[in-house]
Image 1: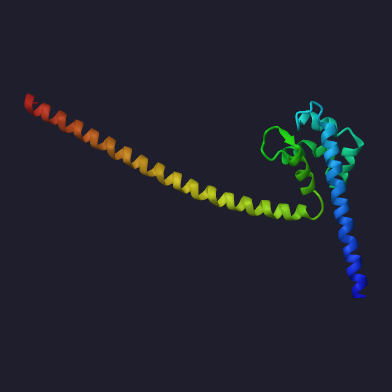
Image 2 (image 1 turned 90 degrees about the horizontal axis):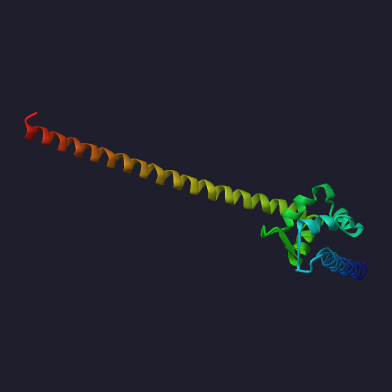
Length: 162
């Protein structure tokens, strides 16, 4: 039984690796077909045209993404916000959408968001304290100038006998 289990596990791992390799090669060929101007990138127009192909719709179905969500998908895949997707962004973006990694990605995103939120709160508190300090400094400076101006006026009035 142990030998059979090891054999089955090995066969399953090999099948998964083959399936993954097929998916990467399929995505590469889809990308090359979609890159109509041959610049090595796909923009939104090229991507939206790719969505008309049966192959691309099948890929999206395989990763359980509705074609109505395609623009959001493109923005997610465009990791550097350049408005274009290179082949690495395309493949890694499509691969991230597969299987249970979605839940993992959401958890990582939640954690990253929490960290960024805390970082933002700390920064906001720091900015508020700097603004408060600057405001107090300027208020005190204005009071000093007003006080000096009043002293000068008083001194001038005393000299004039007013």
